[in-house]
Length: 146
Image (cartoon, rainbow, N blue to C red; front, side, top):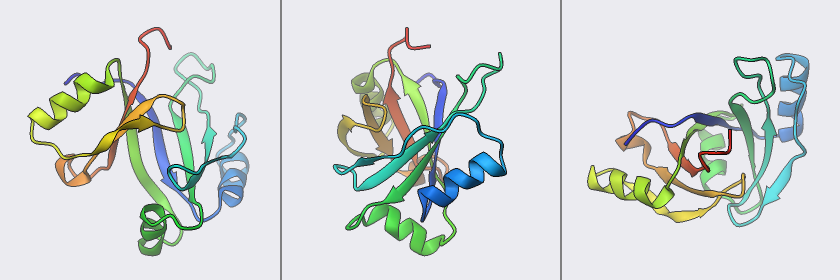
């Protein structure tokens, strides 16, 4: 497995609106996307862009995640962390199925089958107990995407 680009850091929040204000007013974010619902995953998400090394808005994103009614995983996370906090990190790979096979061959617990994530590409998660305590999202991205 070759480490890919860090695409985003997922941050669970009880209120995307409050988090957007924080990233804008406290952190100085200038590029905040419109929040949208992902009903298949039971969440509302909003991406905040950060500048890359060249100053352009092409750096790692922050993915704000708010549970929709009926969501249990993010709601449970917020029960333990009422103010919210880092939920996961997401790395890019060129071939999601090859990456899944490699993680499974190493004995890592892949959580479910690849599915469409918030960026509209295939994703899967790897159990935090197999990733040094960090819930890890793996996302397929074309090598020409950057």
